[in-house]
Amino acid sequence: MKKFLVLIALLGLYMTTMGAVVTKLPGIESPKYLAVDDQQFYVSDREVISIYSLKDNKLVGKFGKRGEGPQEFLPLQFTEIVAVFPQKDSLFILSQNKISFYTRTGKYIKEKKLTTFQFALQPLGQNYAGYGFQMDQKTQKVTMALTIYDPEFKKIKELINRVYEMGKIPDTPDDSFNFAIWKNKMAVPLSGSPEEVNIGIFDATGKKLAEIKHKYPPMKITEKYKQKVFETIEKNPQFKQFKEIVKQRTKFKAMFPAIQSLIAADDKIYVLTYQEKNGQMEFLIFDFNGKFIKQIFVPVSFAYGLLPDPMAIRNNKLYQLIDNEDEDVWELHATELK
Image 1 (cartoon, rainbow, N blue to C red):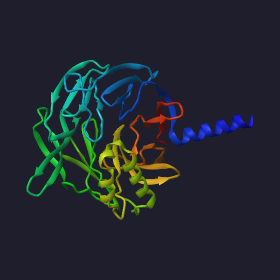
Image 2 (image 1 turned 180 degrees about the vertical axis):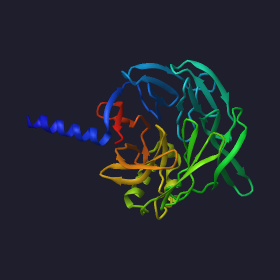
Image 3 (image 1 turned 135 degrees about the vertical axis):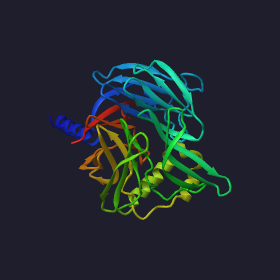
Image 4 (image 1 turned 120 degrees about the vertical axis):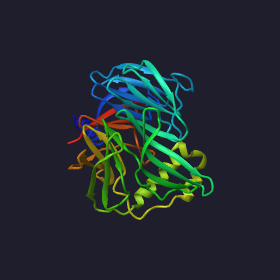
């Protein structure tokens, strides 16, 4: 009886730490991306995309193979991701140098080729948002600009940009430059300040609708964080060929930026910070008018030390794919965002 109670207690701890197990996903080998809508969830396992029903967790469809032809994908460079963005009547698929459109059950519709200077495109209303690159051969500096494009991929407006020097690794952690889209609005970090959450909210044409300025208590970079950075460099296959160079050239900031990354869902902006408490990570939640809603701490699983396992938010739940190494199977977990 005691052994049974201990087992129940450990199970409860596991569910609290990692979120409740929604379902096991046999056949999934190395998932890189997760998307969730009201009816389905989508798992990108390198170049193969699987669609599951949220109602009964059954497989709805599967498509994709490695290649450059129609209905084939090459994962995005550096991240090894084929990204899925569920739309009202279709799926928008982003892979290396092209976007593809499928039905919500996985049937091919069409695709469009991209230039090498357009990266991380997402649908934004009738337009697209993504990064454009421009390199100055003389100075060896690269400008990465968050840009809004029209349906033909012509530039409408450049919102913000960052300049990077070729061969130089930015001080760690780099300021967040990810954007988050919900319906026809986009949230964009405007600064990497350690003392303030500063986010611009834009419409599909690039017009600024609101700005969030939320004071935040600055935090010093910890030795624990530095160890996790080196653990990530050591274990992540993406750094395998040049991990020693990366480790030698990595320099740390004195303070954490207030923003680690953004997620948009359910008419809210979820700001993941670097604050950790009792093994859980802090999210600050705002609405799209810029109003602060609340602070919560949520279990988040990290691969290789610092890279979050694939996760998504929908209907006040944080979904995440977690590798159950004991059973050699990937699982979908869910945590209520209370």
